Image 1 (cartoon, protein in one colour):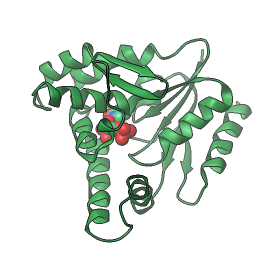
Image 2 (tube, rainbow, N blue to C red):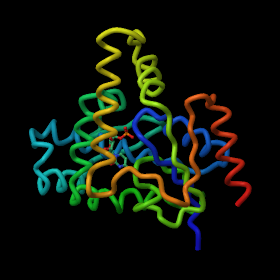
Image 3 (cartoon, rainbow, N blue to C red):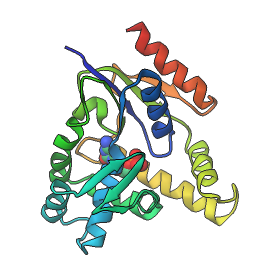
Image 4 (tube, rainbow, N blue to C red):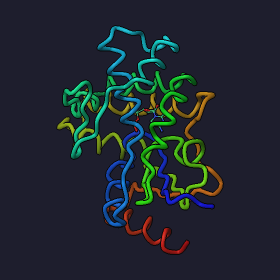
Length: 217
Ligand code: C5P
């Protein structure tokens, strides 16, 4: 039985979040930003002075994450960390803790709990491969590293040339490399996933494409 889930996987800054949220709104389904869970885990570990490579300790924190999602904001221990989890540093930390199998296992149940009868659009790296393998539709999103770095730079107000931009591009490429080459739940395009390259598409065009694929099912 296919699950009432649209799984959208892809590299960092490929626009997964915006796309997934818009598709969820269009269908009246819930939205899961799975990357946020890894980011929150990294931030929580840092706040607790726990090293990102201490697998057992980070997994214990992930298991007990005091997190709430309230009207588009992320609360950790009651504090709004929506902006704090978006930094490149925490993105890197997320990538580090996400490479630890015990951390991934600890977050699995929490991700499954997002699925209700309402339906779910979930974005991440392993939504189609591990978390929701029976998703009714799987999409693999890409865009060139240059385009993704430009989007990220615009988002945080960094000029599109110069050292700041070069750093963003290097960070994106480093994180891609780490996410693709890890042994546990690596970023990959599954044979059954629809490939969507958004380098030359507007967000509206991308949303329409996913909705069309879903309606063709
Ligand atoms: O998607 P986002 O950039 O917020 O994810 C942060 C990091 O969390 C990624 O670089 C990746 O290492 C990890 N992640 C993951 N599996 C997911 C979602 C995110 O490993 N499903």
